Image 1 (tube, rainbow, N blue to C red):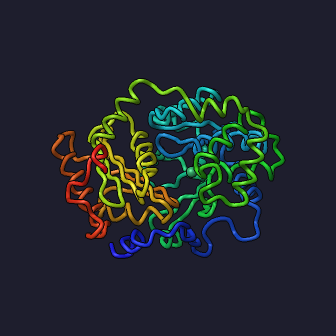
Image 2 (image 1 turned 135 degrees about the vertical axis):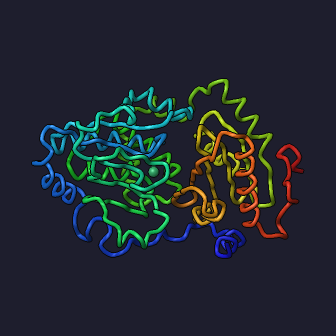
Image 3 (image 1 turned 120 degrees about the vertical axis):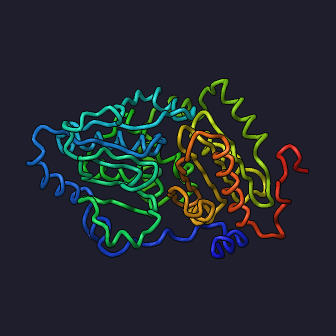
Length: 380
Ligand SMILES: [Mn+2]
């Protein structure tokens, strides 16, 4: 707990560097990622027969995952002559993401209903095997990973057997930017639809380049923005909100509490898992709020989202979770899942109590505003 607690006190405005990968992990130095991918695919392809590549991502894809999946589909089709299938799990319900699907006509298969024998290998974007929010079909090898998330134990990568193409770049702001780099290197002209999708991904993960954006992110953003459909981009950024959104918002506002530098919201059962992340973003924007944590249960899983104003978010979430569940994060954003022991509301209540207790340990005693916090309506 100590290191995280220290970070909260000082709250530097610039995130510390994401750190390097162990030697031998990722694309070898000096090798172009596209050339590496080509060598891997060419090596495996004779054994694939008529089976297709399967593009997957984490549960409930966000704009970065969506942009990267559709960018990769274009790459595999145009640069390699393959016929990949895109599939995903989880219901997308955040209004911006629903608008992205609708405006760009992004359709994909249900990953729960795939006939495994048709697929030669998994191409995974914006996540990695072993992450809690990622379920991989059994019996299909993972051929390639394209990601920018820090695994909980980076050092352990050295001893793990990794997929043949493992492009993990912790410093890159968006997987969509990473995918833009492959398409650029392959000389593939971006059409309006894919340019718009990639642009949505980069702007979502980097907050319009304000957050941990590298040169590649900037180039990806400008080049895709130039080719994007700007009417659609606007409709995706400010979509119509379903009526139920306002009910959920009211509930979140009435349940959340301010504890000195943090806003904590334990929402019990929620309609959609994405509202947890959205509320964490929303509360973090409160004046003088240095970090926010929001949790809510959907089905058999309790979802958590943590946001900070500059420091690495994942040590905070690591402490909040204790040894429960799984988590991941990059920069100021972290998310986790805890499987629920039963659908008994008392189990849920006990879990939220444990999480709140550990979250409060991260706040300096002098900064705590009572054990129960302050209702958002009562903040002076
Ligand atoms: Mn991402």
